[in-house]
Length: 467
Image 1 (cartoon, one colour):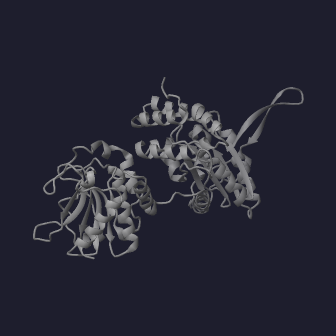
Image 2 (cartoon, rainbow, N blue to C red):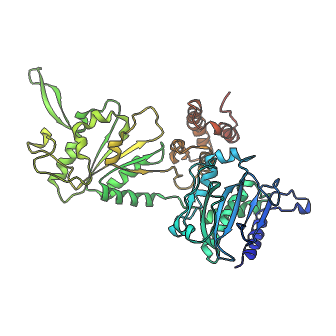
Image 3 (spheres, rainbow, N blue to C red):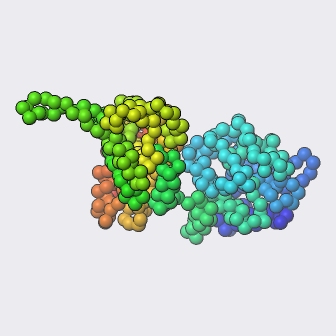
């Protein structure tokens, strides 16, 4: 397909999504199309969609969706969202919103053949992109633009799946610019984006991945916001995949004696105080695994970062090493396990812990512990279908739009939205969701989302977030 033909197809498709190039039929012009497809010496050919106030030629500003042919009438193009050489005039706030980056990142091809690239900060128009070998070897000359291209990939317009990505990117740009003015157009925009959007993991996929991770790494921490089902998933895996399960929930007063062993006072027969050795739940699990080598044993540690981990783990921290090379005579001595030093957790004992990423008052897990555990993030999702599905989706979109990477950990999980009827959902909004979000805002979090959330809650239950 020649560049001119590809350009015509792209324009025709963009028009079906509400793009208006010339302001015909009393419709307001909403785009300028650059058609710089000359292959003259010294010219870098491209075509693209830019803001409607820009000129047909010369330097321009703000975001554009551009296509660079690699060679004359090649079927290979670099497709990219980039910033004009004059920088930002109207789109800086748009570039600073995390959601702008996420919306294109979710439709960015993952396979290595696409040589995909993405800047961590879309406001950065100084740092040059390091293009992959596939783009470099394609022959396209992007030296002039490599600092202003924000995200993109190499596509082959002769391949159906690559043309699906082209449509998805044009549709995403249409959404960014608000081209769609009718319900069918908006439906088309969402449909073409969703065709290429990376699917979210369901519970079955999560369970399979965590089970596989436990099999390879032995020690796994499930991290996520409250209400995402971390504890439920851990218990479900224990019930379905293991023969014996031990459970402990950490809190501020959890000690070494609760986890490993300690000396506990007890009244004797004559009411005198005597001291007995008490086994912690980890020792119980280790004994079970040693005495039953053919059984799979799981220890679940709920809310692992609520305790002072240095005090709770003590010397057994040494044991949490999935690939430890054992040396005879070395290890730690646990009185409850006899005289022989223990130098590793039994192979048939696995540990899965949960961690609430939204609780900012609890201890930060140090890097040494992070290295010993595999970390699996449970992202918020709605459980099944029901009354709260639409509200969950609205709140998820606001988090996607406004939240930084760390603030994404604050998004309420699906359990906040489980309701049998509208009355129950309204009560959850007023007494659970609104206080939660207000607390976030009062702590200076998600500050750019305050107005959107306030409007949403008022639309839902006609009560203000702030009085």
